Length: 133
Image (cartoon, one colour):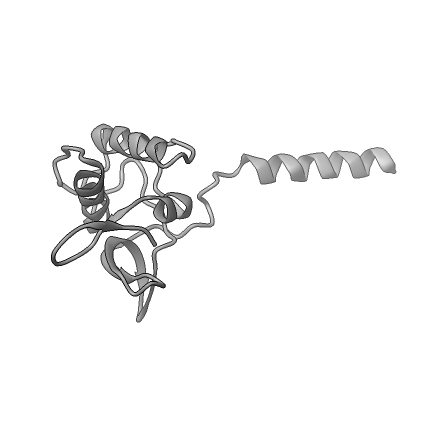
């Protein structure tokens, strides 16, 4: 009986660890402006549904859209990259994101998720500058 229990526990453990880390994170689907707790407005990718939105969302290699343009703008403006802001998360955007993640001392995996959103500096609309959430 205990051998069956161990096997079942092992199988469950394999299933849990085999899923992607970003599986539970909603995919960013829009460009947005978010106010920080300090009252600073920042431009960054958001997940918007109905009347609510969150900045704790993901943008990944192969994605296309306004959310990718916001990420490219962030990397250009706040990290001095020279990306074409075309809304396509390709190899150039991924490489620039890896460099920015390295500068912020977080895992440099080239994926934009909640940890990266919180660590990166994002452009401030209007007169300019960059700030963090």
